[in-house]
Length: 469
Image (cartoon, rainbow, N blue to C red; front, side):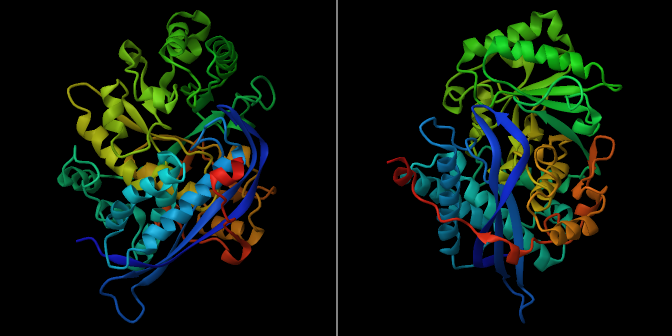
């Protein structure tokens, strides 16, 4: 039986993160944004003399204009929306004063979170950010109290994940899926090529110093079929110079206005000889249309190309709904909720019968070195995701603004993931792969917590209405 816990405290912190190069996706270019840190203290039922208390941590970028892309909002307003979602979630979680399982606490609060955020004009995807980050910190604390690693604990369903939020599944489906997992020892890096990234020559997509020997590439799209086609031809010509074969995915970040525009792109992929280096290696196309259009537009014959939803994944029923529209995949991101990733991976395994394949992908939303990348990497490795977008190491200079002592502590505890080659501690990529061995440690994939004294409290959010008048 899953242990029950109650919360003693939740605290939020942030740290500035400056990018080493601009990252342009969709309609936004990011040069800097804060990184959130969560500290959660819990008490586990039935453990006396203080042995049942523990502190857990999580981290994630406060990414502008991804969770909420409404054009009338500034990037700063969308980050403030995430801060407000965190504060609302904190109040809801701390209001639960009894003991419950980790998943039970999540299930009790997540619906109220979406409803409370809606009253403050915060959309569901942004609303889910609050519980997602709190849940990771609670799970870390629970694993530390139990003295067990993430991989072993999840196989035993220590969080008590059940089917109350996914009535299309039975509880036995989830427990059976979890018990059968064998975490991957290594996960391939999928190198992101942003819309402003250099393509040709030194520093371009085929430069091993930039792509770290990646065999998988994620190519951002602008929403203009003609411009995207021309750019993909250039990228394909460069990637063709690699000494090894490669695979690609395409990500439009909701920029294709409708099915007509999307069909124009797919027609070019199917027929344009110059696009063959890309088209023949294309695994799937990610979130091409806006989330509201996606929910109303069956993709029909286009489904043969393989499509996944990402930004449209803002509820527990998003995967069944998108499946009915022709989509075969959905993204796993810690910032959208680790429990939803588990539920969706269970669905994909259950649905993949009679030659039809459904899948969950790894898309990391610029997880940064340290807690964020380790927890997301562990989740993906546990679910069996063989390659994942990992662009934090590319767009940020190592550990960024993290104090050197903290970065060195992570490197010492996770030497298979980090190294210092004379330019500061950075992510260590082995022939295009990340190793997961050191993630098998007590807690949620980390032996180290951040230096809490070196972090600033989360900035106080203003309402979206206050900032727009």
